[in-house]
Amino acid sequence: MKKVFIIILCLLVLTGCSPGGFESVSQVLPESKPVEKEVMEAQVKVYSTAGSTDGEVFLVDERDKWIVTEAAVMRDHPKALVVTSNGQQLEAKLKAFSIEDNVAVLHIRNSADVKAVEQQNQQQLVTMLDRKELTATERYTLHEAFKAVEVPQKYDMTVLNEYDKPTFEYNPDALQAFIRTFNEAYNTYLKTEDFSMIESYVLGDLLKEVIKAEENKPAITNFEVTEISKTTYDWQLKGSADDFEVSYKIMLVNGQYYVTYLKIL
Image 1: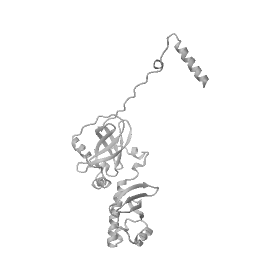
Image 2: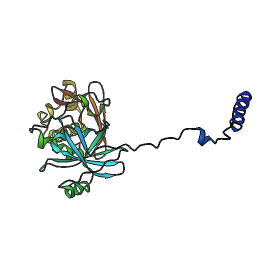
Image 3: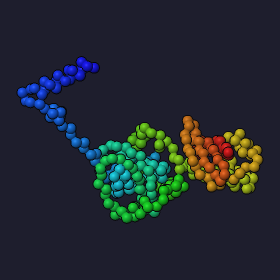
Image 4: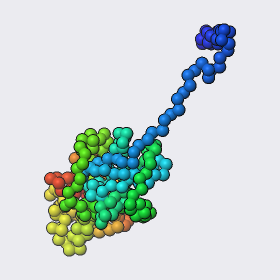
């Protein structure tokens, strides 16, 4: 260590004694170039599990950016994959929509500078953002409204298919909608003792027999989902009702969801 220090000291002394005189570190080292701020265009590409179309940034607040696009494209998932003009891929969350106007507002965050483009319906879009956070139930109304509508397929969907995160592998809003429907049918079954009310929702004879045999079954009301997780073959969904917890396992078979496990704690 001492040898290294002595060598460095000698070099400094020799530099100071050179014909050109002593040079400071700032004179010896090259000047660093200022970091250029990343810039993106307001126009973006929007990919969803239903299709693909264009979007445009209409509002900016530092890193926060809001994009207007077609609501029909967002019918099958509460998120979209946005690709900016410089190729950055960002997950965008559905923040507001109008079924009547086929308009949806998405939110992204990044550090790029962008000049927002004011829309003809700018005030309407801004007002839409003043409303409270959308619930899964509210978002799923897009599916019901546009399920029979032909969704734009403007861009190659390879971008979404090759996306390296599992975000778009399933629709959490669809799972919650299914469980809400099942719970309503289940509560009707408790009142009427007519098992056919839920039979088409349950997969597996063993689970059907367990449900029938269970005594003192409580109604599942005011249910709120607290957790959704995916396994290899199914989804686990947990939530809370009035004064107890409920756990489900859900499987998708030929495009239809089924309950394969039900536990009330």
